[in-house]
Amino acid sequence: MKKLVEIKARCGGAVAVAAGQSITIVNTHGGQVADMWAFRRDDPAEHMSMPHSMVSIDRIKPAIGSVLVSNLRQPILRLTADTSPGVHCMLFAACDQARYRSLGCTGPHDNCADNLRAAVAALAIPLPYIPTPLNLFMNTKFDERGVMRIDPPEAKPGSSVSFEALHDCIVALSACPQDLVPVNGHGCTPTSISYYLS
Amino acid sequence: MKKLVEIKARCGGAVAVAAGQSITIVNTHGGQVADMWAFRRDDPAEHMSMPHSMVSIDRIKPAIGSVLVSNLRQPILRLTADTSPGVHCMLFAACDQARYRSLGCTGPHDNCADNLRAAVAALAIPLPYIPTPLNLFMNTKFDERGVMRIDPPEAKPGSSVSFEALHDCIVALSACPQDLVPVNGHGCTPTSISYYLS
Image (tube, rainbow over all chains, first blue to last red; front, side, top):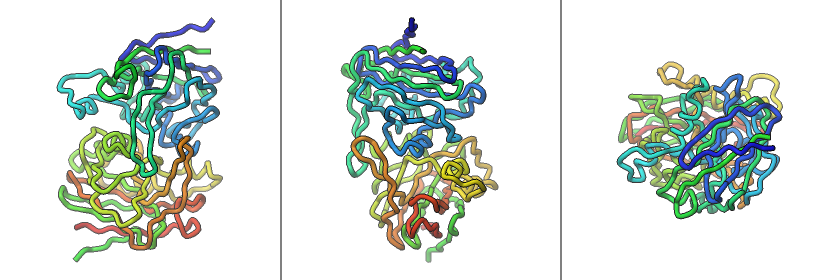
């Protein structure tokens, strides 16, 4: 029986996923963005990279079958199933303190970059920088002039995305704590997400 | 009188640009992609960052007036003039040996990542990773499903783009040596570019 692990609203987590194993991320309540990273377990300086993956898959939105690659252009995860409308974002830097300051926050704010740092702190994963995450369920749209619009996610409660690990990986996730701009649904209310291995 | 500096086909270069000064990159022969990076002179670990800039400008194609920001979300360059059709790419990782291997090259191939390394080698700029460049004149297009197409640049001979430095910077450039896929025009023939300060 699959063991569903909850990542609480505004929080992060990390899990080892063996080569051949799958991880499924569930949008428990719908409308929630989940930032996702993957690091090779044998050499965590090698990580899933969006700027390299976009070149490799010739897409800015991954589709079922898309093989995401590392900063060394090696296959790392394959998107194998998606019960959401398939709208994810490969472009956005993870939110961080500087992002919330630019949105007017004067004090600390939970953020995906710090959630990643905390999630991998005990795992000897070097983070000289925060790789651009795969922003699962994030609903960014573009017009023909390149102007971007962010709408709340189209993912419904229970929508999920599955990835097969192509190497032994550490997968990190953050339930995006964005509550100032409509990255998340429910009137910008961050909620929990879940994942399971299979 | 402005001093035009040539960057030979397939090569790179770097130059200090003082705050308030401008750098203009000229597509000498038209049809050539120029990868561009900027590093803060006082702390080169802070560099122009495309994933942060896209969030900041709400665009995936910079426009006149766009302020590009650093990995710390601080303004670093402002696009002030553009005599090309304004088609640039903020998404693609710089080409590197791994990219050319994936395209079938068995031996070494000139590449923008190594051009950056060589250009800044003497400048004490740390490169724990290659930041995603602003791919000037690179003609990437997307359909509504996120599928990407790369066409040869629309830039004509003499087309140019100008940036005002908002900090003392080191700007690095690479005349992209891609000759296998139509990133560059003239039947995938890499050519020189030029720049001048003003």
